[in-house]
Image (cartoon, rainbow, N blue to C red; front, top):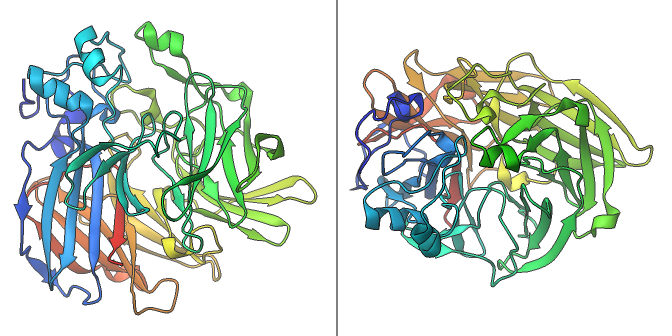
Length: 464
């Protein structure tokens, strides 16, 4: 049956996480403040929005993907949202009920559903990118799902059969070469596969990387010449999953290491550097400086609480960290950057894979797995200074995507965009902050005529 408001009694389906039930097209959105005249493109935010009442446990990773988009065009802004119509969701619509289990509670899927739509639902609810002329919705346990510019679902995309297995939700696009670099991990062998696609979207390189354990590898980092993998002790247990127990666990005795691979290297060329035991969900950026590789990421001392796949729990806090890998000496140095925890890190993607002066991170009230973000901080690596902005006491923000000013010349010439929702009024707006003066607050608020549920990743897709 369709999901009823606040049903079932699950904290991941209530409050600002409560799903919405319709698809809308709203032109002429009300803008408070002054919208930058040079902004032309699409702001997107992907996230979980289950259409049917779960038939067991529910975790946000389970929810059907829904993309919310704001189109900056013709001197105004319009809003559009669409479910990602996976084969699994279409099969459930035919039956009028949920048919798949949860990442936190494995349930047997009916055989007729498996025959029609596969063993697992590819809900594509995590990220939304554009490459090679295609718009791709991503989740790391399946293949990309192609959408149109207007968010209509085309279907799964497998790179003409070249993609063997799943694809990460965090590919890296090199703004100079136009290449998209990505990987896929799996709880079953091969545990890690690596790919490079050229600027036209064709896979031009593939390698199977040998790692000893089936680790959850959500993100990675890329420099001009190298690709960096994090082999951490966040490990899958498939047998436990099939017993209905948590299918992922923290095994600190396995340690943590960073792998360095030439961008188009073979598996035997990877070099591993042991670092202090930790986990990383997302990276800011990485680049080469002479014989060193500099890497920046919010870093957890243990496995984040949200990966335990149960009710929201207070998680270990992520603090920004800097590693410096000396490729000549084979050594690693590391240091904490700040005592203010933050996650969902971003940069100006026009400088991805190369040295960046500025890093942006989302701040939070607490670290329960409810994405209780309430602000953003800007780090200046040259001066060591910071700027931050905190939203209102009832407001919850999300990831802040960077939209470069097409007429700008400096790295921080642009704007930070995030969807902000009010817990009391249950209204949402798009916050537009000047990246040069983050602490001044929004230069514009684009009011969205519906509440946008808390979700995962945001992106700015500039018009060509």
